[in-house]
Length: 129
Image (cartoon, rainbow, N blue to C red; front, side):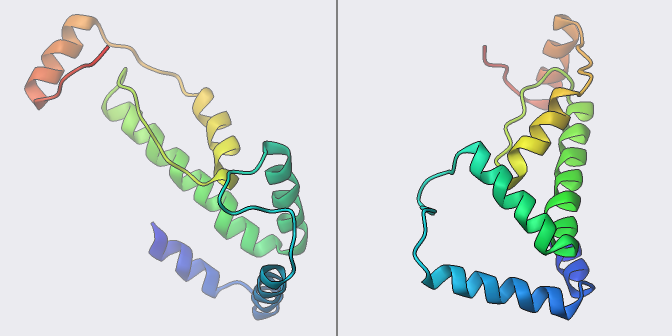
């Protein structure tokens, strides 16, 4: 929940928030190799996340680690509620790798095809293959 994240950001030390805002402003006006119109390479994202964690550990914890856990828990809950169904999730590039690693570890509970058909009909869902 975004409101939870905002509340937790309020608890981050002011010095860390001020340093992060300053770096963001400076980075905006100094030309670099980052093109916001394209998704960066995974290695570049890893480097940025590592630097972010080093320079701003509290913000990294709130904005990356806790958000990853929250989104992963939501995906696990969806899978639990509707096993065997495909789930599509759109996440930011900084979250994709960690969430994918967690999702790959899900134990998917497959139901029998007849059960799936009955469940889909009961919920008014269609299964596309």
